[in-house]
Figure 1 (tube, rainbow, N blue to C red):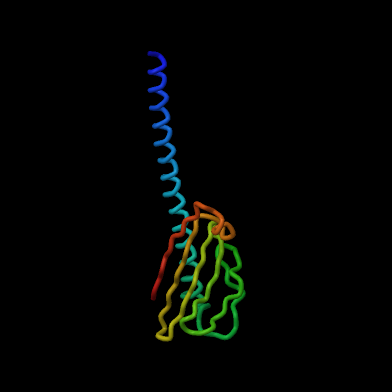
Figure 2: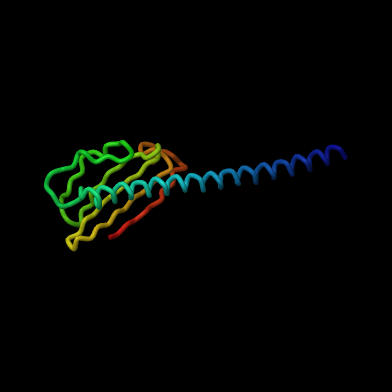
Length: 138
């Protein structure tokens, strides 16, 4: 009788552990998704600032080397032609943001920001990497 009761308790405990483990994984995915969204939003806001406030994505032949976001240099960015995206990548708070800004001949702009819950260098190798996107058009 004691063996049967112990087996039942062990089975119930194992089932509860399995449910709790799945709940923890589910909640961590929600948290990581939020981090990825915030990275994408930060990247979009950075591009918006440099475009609208500083006019840095305007059609010009010289590259820009002085663009920074969150204290990080974005590297040389150069306009090549209308319809071709200008891209940059940086890591706000250790998460990756990849941003492309596309200017069109009708004076409209599209900003596509993709945020990740991991550092840029580990996106391809991290099995739990999540991507969230923010798109702005004006």
